[in-house]
Length: 94
Image (cartoon, rainbow, N blue to C red; front, top):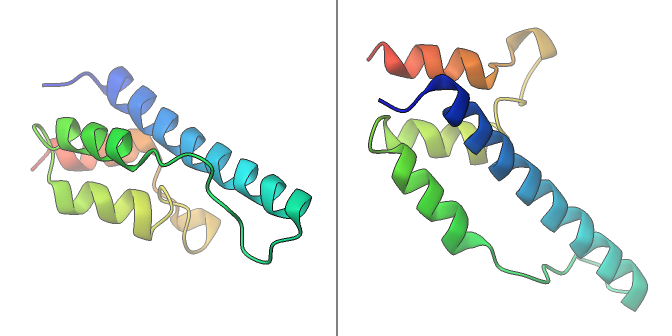
């Protein structure tokens, strides 16, 4: 089983990379006067490979839903947010 610490570190890195990609894309679009932000680098393969590795231990659909639909557990009221630690605990009980 993957450790909770490594699970949290991996999700944190994925979240930070996606945030950096979006921020950099917005800056590029602003510099060139574009309406939509431009993604300069496609990190999809790297992100997907991390999800695949995590899915060795946890349900892939739940992971992708948490990361990409729930924006890493941030959708909804702040009191409803599920932390990476809480997600690990919930998924490891299954």
